[in-house]
Image 1: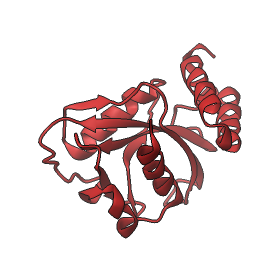
Image 2 (image 1 turned 180 degrees about the horizontal axis):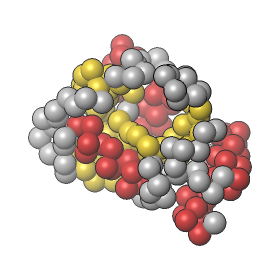
Image 3 (image 1 turned 180 degrees about the vertical axis):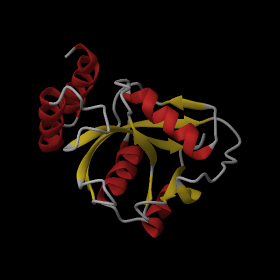
Length: 181
């Protein structure tokens, strides 16, 4: 279990800071502890993904992607593909999907956890994404490039996110960001 120890520690820390999210943290811990291959896409029940809640230097806007496969506006992120360092996964995915650099983690602590079902598509069965999310500041000019992962990208004022998406996890992250100390 050594390759899973760091994430287990981070989830436990997150659980102690977010006691209202005991259901999701317990499910995460059971999954990571129960599946040695939890970081691999080949794990058919589900797998760990890493996402980036990106804000501009002012902290007033977030970068959203109109996800090509899911056809919804969400944060940037993707599969771990064997990498147990989920902060690095989130950073890699943010860079790949936006072609931006100059990201700075707000913290190395988990910002949010979410478990969501991915529908079956082609020969890929329905499965779960156990999504580990980190908050990042983007310190550059903000000029992104839309890649094949997205229909579009947009910097969205946090007060206007509901015009793009009403996904409960997006609403939760915006609220967490606004309420941070």
